[in-house]
Length: 316
Length: 300
Image (cartoon, rainbow over all chains, first blue to last red; front, side, top):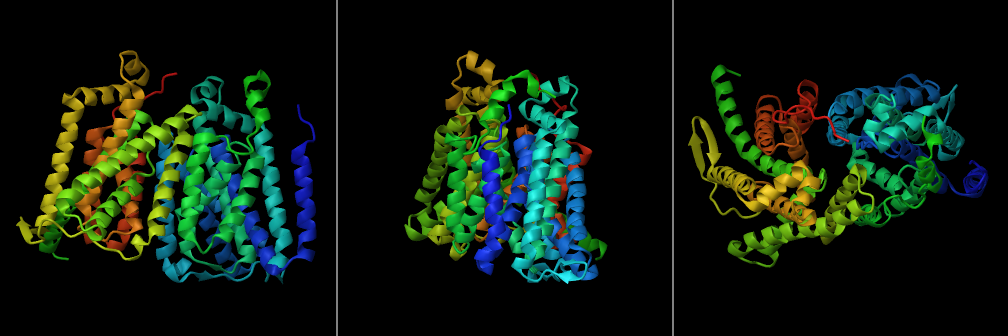
């Protein structure tokens, strides 16, 4: 069933480009690439909860923010090796996600969307108003991340680590997707009841998917602190969740390669349109609606899996 | 704070809360009605409300039409728009593989499109209020002071709710809507045209949103961000049980009162987190909501 195809070639090509890039381009381009890598991690996280488990969570940015503030505050206060601060951000996000998921998944599915939406708004409020910790509306300066005394002070220095983290998260996503756990998530996505009948604890699966997705977002936030030294709550609103959602949807819900391709495409678009906020909103809105109407599976839908779903071998 | 102060605050909070709560209740009704009949949690509810406010604003201030024309025009445009959205967008999404996630994303798309369009026109740059039809002379009820406008808002909201109640219980269309909400397949079998009923429900939700927008806009400054009011409406719907129309009304009133009491007793700054806390408490204590009935087991 599996053959080295377009995916592997694309991956190799991407790797080659990423290796050559630091020698060929300016700091700004590297900054954009770093940012794209963060978006890739964010999109992969959303892919786990929406694509694999079919659950709708709208608090991605909140966990991303938690990752940024946790890592940033740790870096500023203790100067730990950045691996620790990034992990701490991911862990805190996962724990919070697990609790929210526990509460929101007690009733019908849609409560997760509503509760996470409200949670996202509430967290932005916390970032804006908890002045002692986050600096409130003044934003917060963060000390550069360190690795055993070596400070990452510019985009070039952060670049290899940012790319490595993104690659690691991509590998993890593929691993999750191919594991039995991944099959269980997709079983839940297709039918709660059928999954239950097969002995899959549907609610626990959803909750884990949500917590993992929160962890991805937290790690994306930690990664962000490797090359950015200032954070303002303004950028941690619902629009960022929508941006990531657009990436995943256009790429193809349920497809890892779609999430990556979507993240890169829309990361670039959002950087190009940074000045024109309302144009961005119109474009994203129209794209979301249009894709749902005419191409609900996105551009890179996984054709293989759609067929495989009907065959018994994919059932865990 | 003395006891007297607290008593005064309580009365004031209750009454002001009922006024704003009645507007949340209307929006929650719109959300719940659409959810019950089409299974779509409408994430564009706030933006539809916001568009209603902007349509009224531009008709009044730019086209200089009198209120007597502005009100019906706004209602018709918003209701028509939402009906068309259901007919041409949501039908299509449902048809081409519409399950929960896709439907939610489509409404999110509408929300962003509307918000972006309003920002693009530049109408949002100068926040304005609508001129009020009713004077804002104070009215004393108990020790609490409301304005006449407040009283008018509450009365109109309640009248709207009564009309909705009558619609659902005493008209054929309303009964058809309820039937679709209970069991779409059975409804179809007895000859109800699903797509038409769903369009009508969306139109009704648009109408309610426009009423809410017309009611509240003389009180608040109209900006694209007033769409955030939807969070309170979602909270109201969840508190009420999300599938219960009376629950939506009750939830709306509760959210309004809680919000005002939090504002008066704790701080106005904390109001923003009140809806989240309300949702959280509901999910912990009574996840099916106040009037949501017994937790249902989904039938295959």
